[in-house]
Image: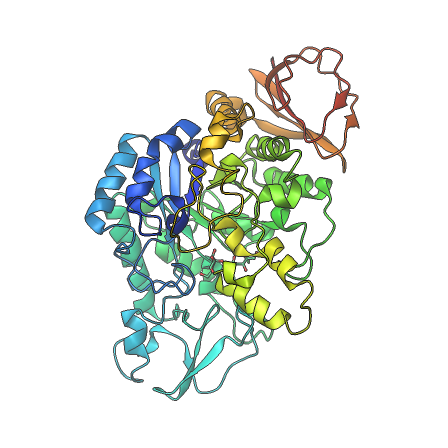
Length: 530
Ligand code: ISL
C-alpha cells in the first residue's frame, strides 16, 4: 500500500454548507455556534473530517463563493478566534478541518479588485484579466452571459467566468500566485488540514480556444499547482480539486502520489447521468451507467490514487430524488445508494442532510428560490417555456442542496432561504426516532467500513452489473466482502452466497439461506473469512 492511500483513504468527509447547517443564534443563518453543538452528531455518524463550504467574508452574490477577504471568518458565522478554538475542539475529537479554497476568482468587493479597477498602473492593476476588447465569446458558467464585463473606470473589460461580481484572478501574474500561496499558509498555520479547491483547473486558461473548453486545464496548470501545493511541508495537507478539466487521462499527472499538485479531484459523471442538455432538463437514467462509471474510476485509481466517493454537494439536487424513490422507498433507496458508493475504494464524501435522506423541495413559485443560477435560468426560460419552467427549477436547482437541515419538525420563523416544504416530515429528530433510520444505517455502514481494512484498502472486483442490479467484491487475504445492490424492481438473482454471512441489510435480512430474489432498492453487505 502506498503512502498516499495509507494516509488518506481512511478519511470520511462530511460537507457542511455553513449558511444552512445549524443556526445557533437565531438570526436566520447557520453559524459556528450551531455547528459546534452538532459535533457529537457528526462524530457518532462516523465522520473524521469536515469540509466547510466558504465561511469567509463575502457579499454573498454566489453564497460565499465570492470572497472579499480570504483570511478571515464572516461575522455571520463567528470570528477568527472562535474558529481557532473550533479547530482545536474538532482535532481533540479526531475530526480534521477542510476549508474551501476559491482561488480562481474573488468578489468584486475584494480589496484587490477595488484597487485593480481604479487604474492601469497601481500595484493591483494586473491582478485580474483586463482587455480592451473581449478576447472570445466564452459564456459565463451557470450564468449564461458573456465572461467579459465592461468597466467604465478603466474603459476596459474584465474576465468573470461566473457572475460578473466574481472577477477571475490573473494567475499569469506571479504576485497573484504568491498571494494565494500565502492564503494556504495562513490557514495551514492555524491548523487547517486540507482544502477543497473550487474550480481549480480554471486558473490556467487558453484564450485562443474559441469555445469555453479553453477556460480550464490550460498549459500552465501543472506548473501553478506545483507552485501552490508542492512544498514538502504541505505533503500532509489533503487537497481535493473541483477540476472539471481533469479527466481520467490527466488524473495520474495531477493527482498521482509522486505529483506535487493535488491529492485528489472530484469526478461527477456518475451523478449527472439523469440530466440532458442542462442541469434543469431530465433525461432517462440507467442504473448500470451510474454504477459502471464509478467502477471505471475505481479501477483506474485503485493502485495508487484517491477517488472521492460523492453522491451530493451544494450544487447538486438530492440523490434520492435523482436515482431513488422519494416516497415509498425513501429509506431503501437512500441506504442502497450509500452502500453501493461508500463500500467502494475511495474517500467517502457525505453532504449535509444526505444522511437523513433529504429530497428535493417542491415549490411552485420562484420567490422560494435564492440561487443566482436558478433565478437566471427562470428569467430566461419563462419567456419560452412558462408551463415547464418551475418543474425544471424543482428538478435542477442548486437550492435543493441548500435548504436548511431540519433538526426537528419546528419550522424556524426566519431563515435566509425558505425551509424545506417537508421540514415537518424529513428531519433529524424524526429520522433518529424512526425504525428505519437512514442516519443509523449510515452510522452502521461507516462503522463496518472503519473496522474492516478490507473495505478501505482491499481490492475491488466487479462481479456483475445490469440495468436492474449490481454486485461487486472487496477482498484481501483475510476477508471477502460482497456488496449486492438492487435498483427499483424485484430481481431474481443467481449468485451462490451460501457461505457468506450478512453484516448489513436494508431489509433486515439475517442470512442468505434460500436467497434468490432482491427486493426494490435492496442492499446487502455479506462477508466471508478467507
Ligand atoms: O454544478 C455544476 C454543474 O453541475 C457546475 O456548473 C458548477 O457551477 C461548477 O462546478 C463550479 O462550482 C463551484 O464554483 C462556483 C460556485 O457557484 C459553486 O457553488 C462551486 O461549487 C463558482 O465559485
